[in-house]
Image (cartoon, rainbow, N blue to C red; front, side):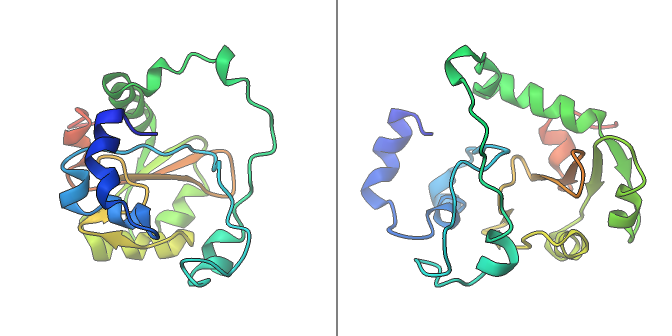
Amino acid sequence: MLSKSTWDELSPKWPKAYWDDWLRLKENHNGRQFIRPEICRTYNFGEHGSSLGQFFSQYLQPIKLNDLHVNWRAMNLSYLLEDNYLNYFASLVRQATPLNGKDAALKANHVNGDVRIQYRDQPDFERIARQFGIFEEWKDGIPRTAYNGVVVFRHRTPKRVFLVGADSLRQLGIENS
């Protein structure tokens, strides 16, 4: 979802395909952060399409489409407003157990609750992402689905895993947690 002013700015040059990659380009995101739903609201139904099935079987086919009814009108979604969301998200990251070391995925399996793992740079992120089997892709210095450099996903359990960029804790106002 975009504000009208953001849509007015971006719509004249909106691409026919790979809009999520395009949106991560510096000249398009222009320093803005974008959030995405934790439970996917879209479904990639086949290998044929704009990406020509490039990552379908490895990353897209296993995604489960939400099948539970959500009464959005009954929910308080004010936490999604920009200032509220930053505080909400920072609180989740702050409360997650920090993990260090090269065997982060193995360690994460033995922690109850959410975990956070810091990455130094793109090669370090890609190394950690491979351990978990998640998409390693970056565009213009931003990992796919990142919010302030943090990629969040669930791994084999309801716990969240936060992959946290080198500057992410500062950006989230967490600093020394």
